[in-house]
Length: 249
Figure 1 (tube, rainbow, N blue to C red):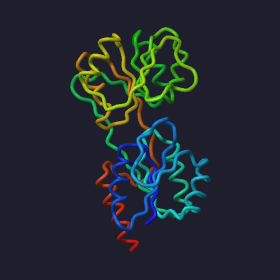
Figure 2 (tube, helix red, strand yellow):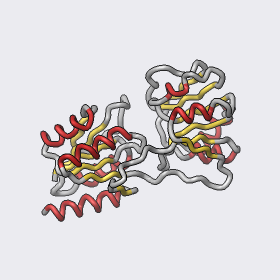
Figure 3 (cartoon, one colour):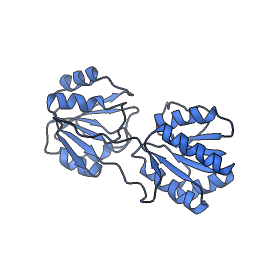
Figure 4 (tube, rainbow, N blue to C red):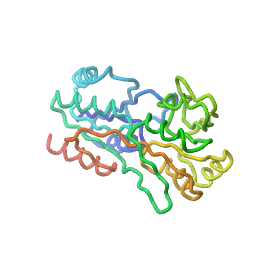
């Protein structure tokens, strides 16, 4: 069963590893190509965009894809929407793999906002030193804030405009709690900004912020289609994929 895994996440790599070792599955993983040195999954890999929903539809047809797994980052809303449109038009099964989001704990000071612009507007009055952990995309939303100083952490350098007062820290998770605590103290951080990505690769910053009472601006995930089939874990995704294979056989 020829399967396209849309990914770049740890979940996508784990699923590709499992499925590639099983008979009856022909796995192709697709990466957006936005990270310069991505961690590659096992098996066949394509890198780059499809050209919107119609481009993806044509690619699915040309490559005889029978099933699609959307295991992209929770904030990769465009490709998730395009996958829904393309697979619906071809009546192909589509599964979305979304890790659980983070939840507030005792002592957390979270402010949830719907998008990057709302995060920038919220941060404007919260402190002089901001730790920005949203990846390299979307940093431009904060470029107009001239008063605060930003510590911007990303895997690759951001494109486009940056806040005039900033320091760029290039790093890839996972991050240890002790290191995150030292980072907050060293840079005298007043407020942390993050996307509500979930997972255990980058959650140490939230624990570090909780320990010292630093407020956290959390950007909410984009919504999936109302009729989307969604699982939270790789084992659930694998069972769903195997069930589809059994039905097909």
